[in-house]
Length: 328
Image 1 (spheres, rainbow, N blue to C red):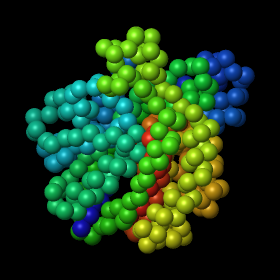
Image 2: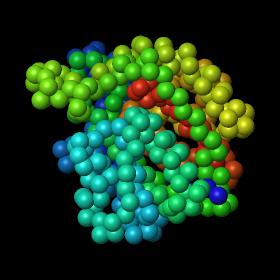
Image 3: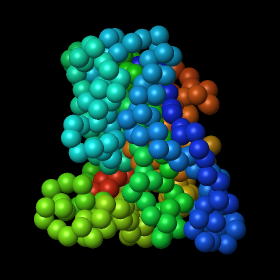
Image 4: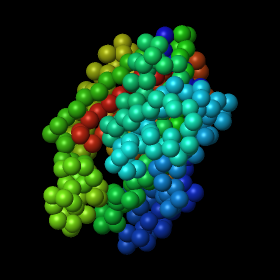
C-alpha cells in the first residue's frame, strides 16, 4: 500500500521581470541574462505575496481542484527552505492564516532545496503504514528578500512561487518506489544564509555582521564542481536501490538549480533531452518550491500513462543530494 496524487497546484506571483529588465537592474549588457544565464523572465513576489500568503492560495486551489476541504486532510506538511518567521513554524502560520477550525496535525520539513522530496519520502512512509489517509504537502518560497544585486549569477537565478500536492492512500499504487539521500559535509560552506538562528544573532554580534549574514551567499563554482563529480555515481546507486535501469524512467524532474547545472545533467546522465523537465528559463530557482512546481508542470503539460516512472532529482545546501522514483 502506498499513495496516489489526487491533486496538485502551483501559485506564481503576479509580477514578472524580463531578462532585459534584469540586465538593466544588474548593469549588464543587454542580452547577458538571456544568453549567459538562460533567463526569459522571473516571477517576483510583491509585498502582499508573503510565503504564507502564497502557500494559502495554493492550498485553496489544490483543495478546490480535489473537491476537498481541510477537514478531509489528516496532516499538513510545509516543505520549505526559508521561514516566514523563526517561531511559530511555517505550517502553523499557514493554518493560522487559513483560520483552520479543524485542528489538523501539521509540521515543517526543511532540507533546503530538497525539502519537498524529503516530505514526499516521509509522507510515503506514513501513508504506507496507515498512520494517515491524506497528506497535503505545500512548499512556498520568497527568495528575493535574501538576494542582493551585487552578483549577476545569483540575482538572475532565483525567483518566487509555491506548489501544493494532496496524497491519498491507494492500495493499487506504488507511490515512491525508492528514495536515495546523501549528505556531503565538505560542501557545507558553499551555500549559506548565516543569520536567522542562534549562531549569528543580534544578542551576540554587531548589527553590521548580523545584517551581512542575512543575505544568501553561494560559491557556484565549488558547488558545480562537487556535484559534477558526484551526480552520475549517485544516480546509478539510486537506480540500483530502486532495482531499475535508466530505460525504465520516462521523465526526470530536476531541481531547477541553474541553467548550466541542467545542461550538465542532460549530457552527463545519458537521458534524452525530451525526458528532462527544464523550465528554468521562466521559473528560475524557486528553492524548495522548484521540485513541486516542476512536477506539477509535468503532470499538467505532458501525457502521463499509468505505470510511468518519474525520477525526481536534486541538490540542497549542506551539501546534499537526493533522488526518488515516483510511480504514477
